[in-house]
Image 1 (tube, rainbow, N blue to C red):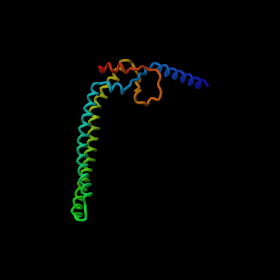
Image 2: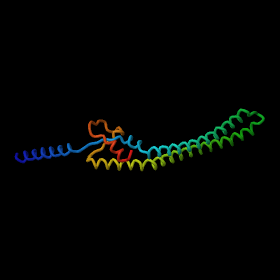
Image 3: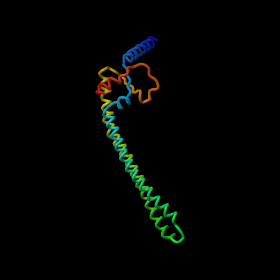
Length: 176
């Protein structure tokens, strides 16, 4: 019986110690999206990515226009087909059909490569910015004694009340 009481007393002491220790931990929150989008690097990276996207779009638009011309040419030949020129026009339509199929395949390949290139460029441009912001978050959190820093912009925190918003401190650390 004495051992049982000692065990319960020890459990209560451990529980109270753990509760007291956790009550002393500071919790802060940030808006990671706001911090990232406030950096000059983000704005220039976004502009560079937009320029690349416009270049790729123009390239694809040119290919679409060429495809459309070939398709219009095929439709015109089909409209002007008669019994007298049927064999000649059918042969020309066969050639145009093959060209259209090849053009469509090239357009799809160029589109796929463009999407991959844009994805790689986006990662290349934004990864260093995210790393820099994370370093600033870690530095400020450590300097101010935070045990946890939650990102409220991600939407993965269903509820929070209290804590300190250290977004402005992070921006200051980044020189924003």
